[in-house]
Image (cartoon, rainbow, N blue to C red):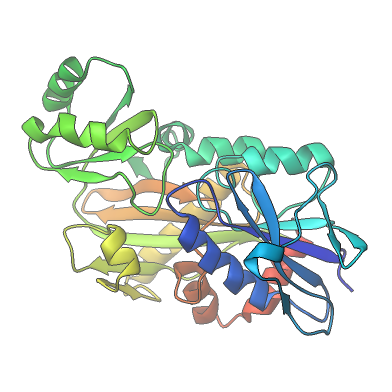
Length: 338
């Protein structure tokens, strides 16, 4: 018997990733155990939260036309359906980007005392900012961080690009510190193109990280808490047809995601152990995915994804299947041990 009765699956977002978020949320909602929980799908974007569909225990899924979707009452996180008030007692957050990945949604739920699937508001905020997250990870002995520089919108870009040319080896990657799905990211091969790339990154946020490119194999690994200890899922190696794992490679089929990754046992153990340590170092909750570059001189940390993609083709579901785990049972583990 589950601890919760009414699970709100929140998807959509205020960011460029909102469509991917919807696909992830729909997949999660379809895999939550219908014998244990009532599942309510909430589309939340730019402050408008609406019930898209719901499925009571052992009942058919009911959808609402867009013009007749019930509004969520944010005062107590509830919804009225056919005159009956449903108060959600758990939230499964599948919002990529703002407000689900940067801690804002978590802060709202924390104030109401409603349990949820992801990291706390503080940990989410730290992990979502690529520069802040690297500051937490830099001192770990099992993983390295690539040299980088941080710049805030309004800074002297001419002086910044000059400093970057002196301190970093090109190519570099210019990234919004608080974005995902490769939006706003540019691979820059020479200093003369850096200022333009930084301006482009500013279209996604007010702070930017310029990170020295590391040549190596791209690996990713997810970790989660199973109620007893932090566990790691099988590793995936990502082989992009493009110069790097950009949006086109991620979502338009221009990459291969090999699971389990064809690496030696010692490398697999190192990556999985490091993932569990990063999870614990940051104080994560739920399932998170950590991305790396395996270079000749060691393992390099890229970023933590506290709300990883959860479509049927996404990396974490692939890891779950490769581990021989049932997706519905896996989601129940996340829900019951949040």
